[in-house]
Length: 524
Image (cartoon, rainbow, N blue to C red; front, side, top):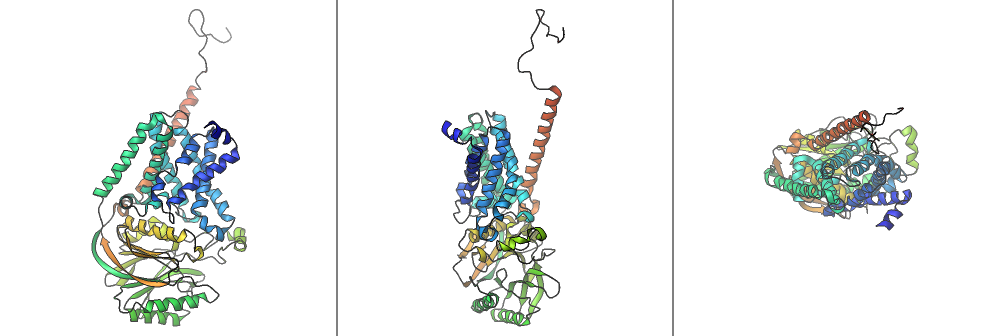
């Protein structure tokens, strides 16, 4: 142990170890999908920050660990962003510096049972505050939220219907803190055991008492996945392939057909021939088509990514313009300063334009759908709003064609399970190149995943459910609770600092006394 401590006295070595410890949780996400690993993955990082010789060093351990975490969960962006991924990770990693400081504050040295118990509440709250800040679209969005690693765990999905992915993140971090305390803080082991018991009890209570989706119908929805199609004429060839696959759905009693993101590379007003071909497909299959147009619009300046509903007579007028755009991928922040990014990566050559509001579309025969485009499926507030506005089915249209061979397609598809469980609405995740997937109203997987090697169309039997989940009704209450905890902590720390300032530091040795027992008076 002394050898390890001595080896870590080097700031550079310690920073490298912290970055490595922060990257460890990536294995809990798809593609490895070791969901159980999430409950211990933070322990090395916590133990390192706890052992920091100073509070400043603990903050550095938090920062470096955050850098490693951000690089690991976004490593698939390296071909697109190049050096920018390290710059962005370094900037966002700062968010974890207070987390590292708090670890040492509550678990460092000889921690009392009171401090250990407080750590089980404060540290998960601080982690949630980090996830809240980095979930802002301008900072890249909520990709890699720790709770989303639990997308295939039934009890966790039930908890998601109560408090969303936020509640899952809080509980996962709380378990990690409890395990770290059990390993390293003997004085606080009883609170740690109590925390583990409370987590198990909360999960069991949610499993037993949280309202279950009330299935009261079903629809047949087809996903069309053309596969990887490259080259300068790829928009035309992709459309031809999608048309060919869609024709195969004729006679299968499909209620809705969904194409992926950027499935149509031309504005349908400028290319009425394409609009007529899609309308013909609607007549042949007896179903409306939800396509995604990625092109300059004829009625306003700029490029939009738009979900467009097309029926037997052409576009129905139902349209949703993507609201939350991917930094660098779809626009370059401060292009006048950072525009050179286009020369070193696959950054957007021209900024896309944003939509202004979410849309619930009426497909007919009583079916209402809520479209989301690309990484908008990572935002729990967007799917919650669609469910609250009356959507029966959530639809995610994505591409992921730039990230074949990485973990991104599987991780993106897994997010649909969380959105379905949170809202009690089934979700269809349709992509150009895989992975396409469908999840039921409880977050359960329906039918096969269409992998990155598939070029096919598949029909899914999708159960419909209604009712309102606690998460849709009450929103992000775990986040609000975490912020209250941190606010109370700040008030307490402020009061403590004020009290110390008034009383002054305790004397290191007792004052000398005279033979009469009175304190020595200076100058006498």
